[in-house]
Length: 416
Image (cartoon, rainbow, N blue to C red):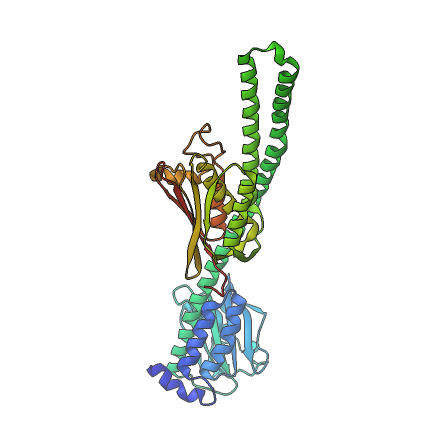
């Protein structure tokens, strides 16, 4: 506090108090994301802090001093490079100590020929990063000026903040490089995934069509020559080909869910769920299912992806209640802050809750194909969609006691 009190006279005409100004400068430096931004802050800040006629920000560039930026009443050396041994900034960085010179022409460390074309009569130079200097901050006066110990401490404090800012920039650039490298890797992986999807879609479907087609021809043209066992084998082949085709379709859907662009909008989940249940009832007119849907549940996300997720959840509920004389499916939820917490509950076959996590991995099923047909891709798709929205999905159930799937999704900002 004494440091700022001693400097108060230097800010008589400034709208900010010394402490406020230094705090503002420290914040600006902490937010800088490039050396150029740091130099721009420092060149203005150092002049204001000590009331000098000019300021410069000098980088160490191997065995050279690079005058990166300046703020002065007349041109200094912006953009120029000098040997470390030929300028005072190089001396400061080499000796790791400040230099305060009241008369530059009376000091042997000053290259007088370089200063004669300038307005400079006095200067103060401080190193940035005292242990291993990487830069220097210089302040200049047009008339002979004696820098006070307090002003020198302020400039060194600015240099220390600058050192931290420069290290932050280095770390930030390293992080950006890593992000760029990771992004490039992901782009390669996505291209490989697209290539794989194309191969699956085209190369695997062709032999499946042949297997199914020739099996059908055998049954229609040579069925009379086959006994019941032979016909059963061909039906099994066709069934396996059909299941494989369905598995390919589901794999491609899972792939598309992962890479498709998202277009987030306000979604009335209650309306969407009713629409899906209506379609299921239309497709299975022989089923009687009591459906209860809570009104007014709103979320924010990609409408197409969210619909795919709830189609999978509701299709499962519809499928696993098929052996119930009175089937029941319920949808409801609540809003908790910026999240909508929803559930889909049924009174179907259920499963062992201790194995619930397996459900969200591709191809993992807790029921046999003969009990309930499926590929084991649907819930993996649901989880991937929820994760893309920053949401979650989990399941609770008991064997033969129904199941409940809970999901969380963002809500529109006007509701959060």
